[in-house]
Amino acid sequence: MGGTVAVLGHHLTIYRRVWRGSVFTSFLVPVLFLLGMGISVGGYVDERQGPLGVPYLDFIAPGLLMSTALQVAVSEAMWPVFDGFAWSRRYEVMRTAPVRTRDILLGHVAFVQLRALIAVAGFLLVMTLFGAVHSALAPLALPVGVLVGCATSIPIFGYSAHVKSENMFAVVMRFGVIPMTLFAGVFFEVGAMPPAARALAYVSPLWHGVELARGATLGVDTAWSWPLHVGYLLLWIAVGWPLALRQFTRRLDT
Amino acid sequence: MSLIEAQGLVKRFGDFTAVDGIDVRVEAGEAFGFLGPNGAGKSSTMRMVGCVSPPTDGQLRIFGMDPVRDGPAIRSRLGVCPQQDSLDLELTCLENLTVYARYFGIPRKVARERARELLDFVQLGDRADSPVEPLSGGMKRRLVIARALINEPEIVLLDEPTTGLDPQARHLVWERLFRLKQRGVTLVLTTHYMDEAEQLCDRLVVMDAGKIVAEDAPRALIERYSTREVVELRFGLDGLDTYADKLAGVGERLEVLPDRILLYAADGDDAVAQVHGRGLTPSSVLVRRSTLEDVFLHLTGRTLVD
Ligand SMILES: Nc1ncnc2c1ncn2[C@@H]1O[C@H](COP(=O)(O)OP(=O)(O)OP(=O)(O)O)[C@@H](O)[C@H]1O
Ligand SMILES: [Mg+2]
Image (cartoon, rainbow over all chains, first blue to last red):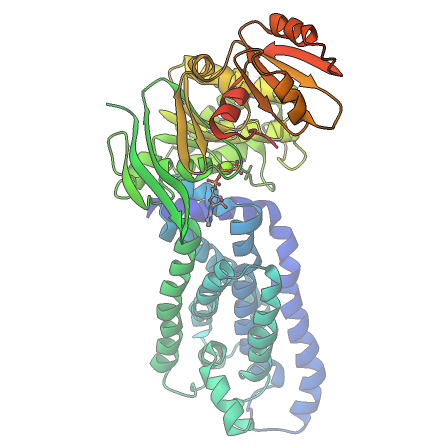
């Protein structure tokens, strides 16, 4: 426990020095996206009086909230983890102190979730200011954001410890983050897609997060019952953790 | 009880054997060295002693404890200076030390005080609040050494503490390490510089290809495996072997290198006189004291630094 806290403290100390640089990508970009899409595309969509029942901006806001959690958590689990092994060798230094490899992993995972939580909280505040929040359950979107952050980033910790080159991160963006952001229910209901594409959306952790977040901020029913969505995200964590720990052990305990 | 005790210690990576059954004992208060060329297995050994790399085979005890079972307990009493400088470039010198102190459960206030003292000790006191990034190589190395001392370790492991530093920076590091030793801290270091080994180590082992090829005090090794003096002769580039024949019997022993011939003799000047006496006119002659380099050459047939 003490080891994990020290690792978290280490990352926080560094973050205190560099946080300004992260505000733009982890907060301003999604907000600009929300306003741009919500107002421009929303104009067309809302005119047609579709089946959404709420303004388009309010519909996509919880989706963007979760994709923010995804983006922040996954990118924080890529380059900084690679850095810890290959460039700064920060993990190697931690390992010389009386911490265990699992503390090093858990402390960094905790830091990444904190980063995701800060971004999600900021975004949720903006949503509230724009009147996109319709339910008192909205604060539940925060733990959902952390859940999405964990489910997506923990396996990526393992991936980043495994790859030999940082070029491999483009693969994650191209085949994971971007398709999920586009097709996992952020911008439109997955029911509008053909069955094969819909199945892929069901497999993606993001869709389950979006369903839960939409339930929280709009007060609508989730597609499946909420424990199923939560359970599915927990499954990603349960599978991801041992994989990540194995890769960290392979790199740090040889 | 020895602080570090290794018997038949082996480290394999797949099929490759990096450390091939070494026996080592390090006593409290001594400065112990691993001298060897690139790839000899020095870092692999240090990482096993530092309890971050489990031994493949053999016995290893540090403070009488088992490195695999008691890793964290042992590491809390060790200071480690890894081969490559790894510092948080985003942080100040002071923060680099205080952040690391947290891993040892040192309270913040104590950590700050101790960090300032250590920065003074490595002569970086005036840099405490400046970022690490612009520091010179020698300063970074000293900062890493200061960090390794934050937990007041009983043993400090230094993996090539001065590689890549200019002579002035090296001397400063040596001087600080010498002071540590005077305070009773046990030093274990690796190096491929014979002068470093001679200056700092009470006792050392010469490693080559994962094995220990000799072990003793630096001077004793030189006395045992070399002569008091060495004469370096150069004869242009061609046919050093033919000169070797003509030099037979001069000094105690002779070694032909690609670019020069080494004559091992108790009295170098006398050997030079004999060379001239045989009508030979080398293009250059250098008489010097024997070093660990000569010991290494004698034991392995190769030079230490290529
Ligand atoms: N993690 C590893 N996986 C595979 N091989 C390794 C690993 N670490 C070291 N080796 C190999 O083991 C051998 C010994 O390496 P080691 O780093 O211990 O040597 P060294 O004496 O410290 O050399 P140097 O002076 O270059 O630092 C080398 O051939 C190296 O390639
Ligand atoms: Mg080495």
